[in-house]
Amino acid sequence: MKEKIGIGIIIIAFLVCLNLYLLIFGVPLFIIGIIILLLSDKKLKTKLIWISTPIILWYPSMHLYFYLMGTIGTATAQKLDLIFPENFKGKAIVVSDMPCGEEIEIIGNREQLRIPENGILLFKGNLKSGYINNRYFKIDNSGNKTEIPFRANHMFWEDSQNKPDESEVGIWLSGGGTSYNPSPNGGINYSFREYVISSKDSLEKWSEFKRSRKLEKLTDSLVAKCKNKN
Image 1 (spheres, rainbow, N blue to C red):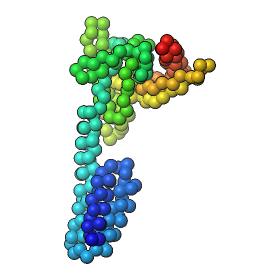
Image 2: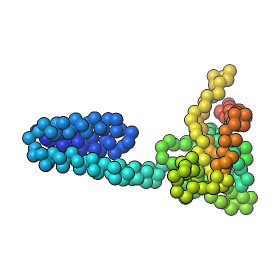
Image 3: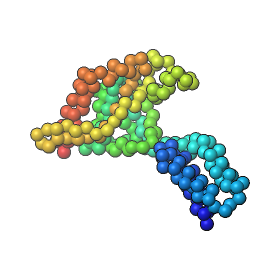
C-alpha cells in the first residue's frame, strides 16, 4: 500500500512541478513521495527508477509544458489588431468598456482597434487578460497598412540572438490596469492598456513624468465626458 501512495504522490508532484510557479509546493510533495516509497517493501531497483525518472524527465517536460501552454493560450486568446496613424510615435492608451467608445469591428476574426491621432482610444469592447494575440499596424491616407514589429526588453539583452537595432522603431507593451479619477460626483474609474511606439534608444522619453501626466489628464477628461453623457 505504501508504494502505491508514494508513487501516486511522486506522479502528482511531477505534474505540479511542470509549472515553475508551483515548485515551492511540488518539491516538498515530491520529497514526501520519495520518503513514503523508500519505506515501502518495493525492490530497491524499482524505487530508484520511480525516483530518478521524474528528475531526468522534469527539465524537457517543463519546456514542453510551457510551449504547449503558450501555443494553446495564444491560439485561444483575444485577437486584436491595433492600427495607428502613419506618423504616430509615443504612448497610446486604450480604455475599455466605454459606452460612447469606438464600436467593435471584427475582420477575419480579429477585433480592429483604430488609434486616433491623440493616442487615446475609448473602446466599447472589453480587453481580456491572459495570453496576448495582438498585431500592430500603421496605416497611411490610402489605407495601406505596414506592420509594426513587436519589441520587449529581453530582445536587447547581451545574450539575445538576432538583437534588433536600437534605433529601429517598434511597439512596446507599456502596462495597464485600473485608474480612479476622483470627482464631486463620486469619481470615475476605468480599465486601460498602454502601448508605446518608439525605438529602444528613445523609449525612456515617453515615460517622462510631465509627458505621461499630460496624457493621463487628457484620458481622464475624455473618459469623464464619455461617462457623463451616459
